Image (cartoon, rainbow, N blue to C red):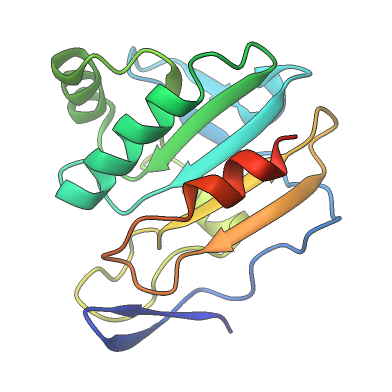
Length: 166
């Protein structure tokens, strides 16, 4: 079972994350307009799955802003921010903060992302929410890079993510 830290305390995850080189499991998510989409329906672009606990936290908001900016010029890449936030809250955040270059996907309805990627925290104060992780997929949905951020309150290594897209 994978672990991360939350404010220095060890937190267990649901299981082990998928491995680099494996095919990413497909999952459904709910978009801000309440329609559903799946990972594979995002098409034959490279994908950056940005798993965050909640857009209502400063670190998650900052991370979303940075990926929104960094992925804007990459026409062959789609960014997908996944959390268990309700689609209404995700929509409000994106509209208020001008987030237009990444897709927001809520895992609240099916919890398929959390179950298939094993990113959900199973104990600690954020139990039930996703840990902070980034997955880079190629056009065929093969996982090329994973960063499970060791401390949930810290941002990922953006440069490593961007390098994995090359």
